[in-house]
Image (cartoon, rainbow, N blue to C red):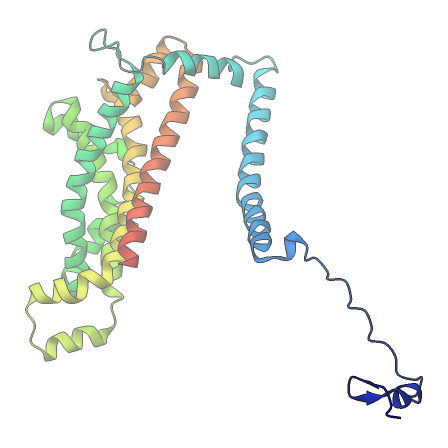
Length: 301
């Protein structure tokens, strides 16, 4: 009689099989990956850490400043506190461009007039200072000739130039622009000259071998290599120009943020003076950040 077979094996073989053969082990349950171990979770954690690292310290610094300000204001002094200053700022900026005559204009007009003077004086300083810096750095004779003059004039206080401007120009408006010009020209001259002097000698040797003209030396070698130094000088100069205009307008009068601060002092409106301090700082910061963005863009290009 033929043996019954199971899957090509006889029943006797199945019965005689050793009992040591174990059944296959059940599959282990799949482990679910935590969300923070995924790539998106890791990116979220890294972004959160970066946010806290960049945002928390400045926020704590501002809170500490406001707390100290409130403490000084509540100690019996005549300085208005943060709340009172905030209310005055809301009222002030609710209509920043009113015009009730030459001596009574909104803070917006005063800021724009100051920026206009800074723009004119700064542009004139750049038009003179940057080419002069290139020539000083390029020609050693010119460098040795002008170095003593620059060393004497550069440390002079900006306001010391104001009487000279009033004497020569006879008007307060051009005198203020003159002070901005003479104060902001030095960073551009010195930084540009330093950049030209730090160009590797091999560059100029190649230009000499190729018999390049001065125009091609400037456009092909000097300007691309010196551009980062020029932008650094421009960034420093705009800070000086905005700093100087406030002091100059306090003395010359007219419509401007400096004159507005002095006028508010005459009115004993200390809250408006504090607001003007913040406005001057914020506008100066924005000008500097704008020039830094331009510098980064030129550097990447």
